[in-house]
Length: 243
Image (cartoon, rainbow, N blue to C red):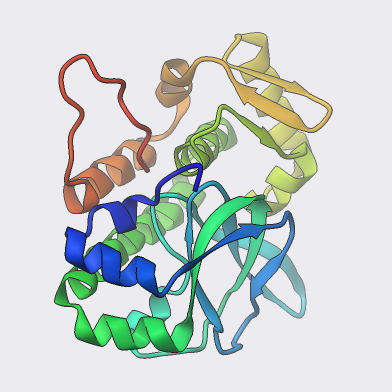
């Protein structure tokens, strides 16, 4: 696999090897549907080089992103809560690699492995913090702050500086008007923080982008590092991106 999955990596060796023994490497395709609203989940995914968008929608509203999963976590957390149905939809937003395991073997391994249970519970805690941040961010923060947070979260999960996304797609996922994203992205590009051309957006200055983001991003990052990061980089080592 080209990249590791942090949730798997933080497991003790025995628990990690048992989990990987029931997983298979797969390539996720752009716009591939991985789960549908209120439909029993068939597989659990641990992205390693891909990113998945989790959305909600209704008969009279378009899809709206309520979460994203990349190399920091997994898709299929509801199994840990004793449910096979997912009241949301999941679709691949960035193609790439992942570990995949059928739902039934994963549920069996989860019952067997207390280490896996603890890791999943900590990850669920992180998701809850993210959801509360999302609600606060949507209510109180400006579009340019939310865009900076969204770009940082995407980069953390893909570990790439560039992503393929049009202003229209970003606006749809964030639940705002396209003109707002165009204006905010244009200002970030004018200041040399990002570069955007023909649907490809590249982050040029991550530190400046972090300064533009709202406080929600720093809170989420701190929570993740506290709950799920077991290994810290030594002095002189390059800092890895973490959500």
